[in-house]
Length: 395
Ligand code: MLT
Image (cartoon, rainbow, N blue to C red; front, side):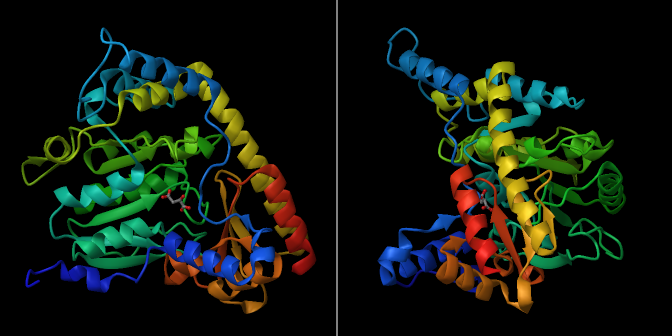
């Protein structure tokens, strides 16, 4: 062919982090079929507990509606059914945040929203924390954006701040509780970020996919900070809160107050979604609504307590071994320092070949992740305990 392709793709790493891990694990299993059978996966943050009973009932009832001529529905609204937008607005109200349902856009996943939001943004400098969820970086590389990294490290507790950044009208990505480090911004730190964004005319894209793991006075949403509605878009998901990694439903808040150059981000996102997206299926939206009902949320929080017990088992082990780590307290992720100065891919191979335990090498989340490793608590209790038993012997 002689067509022009998107040359920016030349600047991407060869494969997406979790595809690369899956490839290495597959190769290991082919080479060592017997040991391959013993593999315990604490790599990708994929949930293992089934959907909550209230969610399943709601989805079943919705499927029956779809199978009956009198209740059948065709295309869903591109922005989500009102019942779900209102349920999400009430969820925000439960932690004191007022979001009008019209500012909430339902989608099929936070990953899609993170990747798609780039569509409505122009050629700004984009600041991305390092280490970080790789989709922020890859989606901006695909669009050929200028990218600067804001380093997270032990010194700043893996919570980069805007100190020393000189910019005007830039785009910043933040994720709290953080993937991969599990670190959480408190209210004061988020206030610094919001004030900085307002002062410099910048936009914060705030990923709150792990908000359900937060307890106490830590913020669940950037909109808990005054003024954030003028400078922040928030992306959240049912994946980790309600175990929807395979069911697919999320939302993006694009406040009507967020304006730049006389253009409304809300109107632009509305236009973008109406053109390129046909909404999330009715049974899935009913299931998501049920996940936020008092009964459904209670059941989902029981699952989260189960995962947090796994995180405690992993953290206790690291404490016993004197291995330093962050996360595991308000986050399903435990971010540890690789022992004996190993690089993160070396440690990955070491755990895979010696203990058949799969984690995620920190370097896959950015160069500041080199020398670190992420374990997830989304595995089963038996798998987590077994992994810890093997690591106890190995390390
Ligand atoms: C992760 O392991 O970082 C997440 O599961 C990836 C995702 O949410 O897409």
